[in-house]
Image 1 (tube, rainbow, N blue to C red):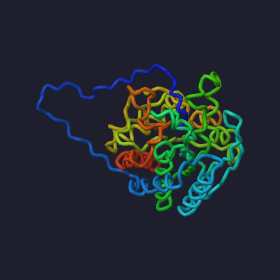
Image 2: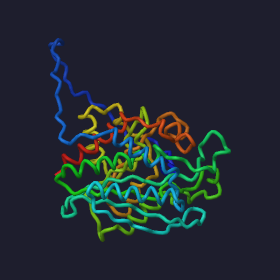
Image 3: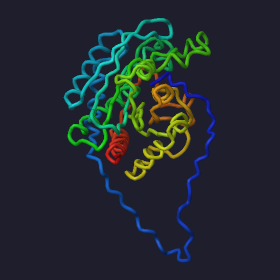
Image 4: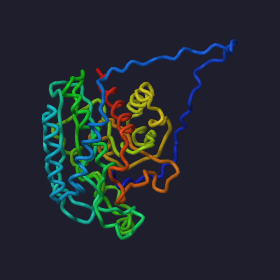
Length: 335
């Protein structure tokens, strides 16, 4: 994930869980449970898991490497196999240290003729540094990124497969952004102090300034980042709340209706520099970030974040299902 600068934004918003039940004179009366009937097709967590495993099998997907090229070709072929109109947006972007990165955003379009559209996105590159590994000898080693990168893409590939099987009422664009995770490493932060925030999310920043369709618009966007680990907790991220509160409400409501509230926590969780920021601020598509945020941890993320241990052992099919089902439900309820 982005160098994931979790901004120390103190929760400026208090989310109060309202007690909706009024006190009754008869305490023996129990309200009947309201059942919810899912409208979206089924989401296969087995398939999503397999798509993540396939990405990891290429090795680290760092720009300018053969593994990166091979995985990109795989993602293009899978989107085409699932019936998407695919656009490859190739570009050369400069990393924080001046390194020229050969990158490509991979875009899959469904229902190109539909005016009402939803944007779904994740980053597919992996970090060239394990700069939060407990062993400093690993700092300059690239990581596998099963969760940080692979999980969001895996869920969206399964979403693409479902979209092919049954078209929703709206058009859907799936974008796999590149060069998200090449930001200033933790061990060099002082050297680039004050400018490190702009070294992340290079692919989404490029697309936001140069969309694949001139004047591209969508009703809203949903970013998936680090959505695969066991016990994941998705809080209402600060920038998501700032730019797209109604979208947060829509997604968190769907999660609750589907029984996934233990993952989708209805509380503020801080701010993260991630791909949704340029999409919101430059392209003006109101977008949210579904990202695993761990309260009480040193960096705010899962235990293997930016370490050599970000591998398939961290991936939970139950978590993938909670996220995938929720995203599909939002899409298929949209008109």
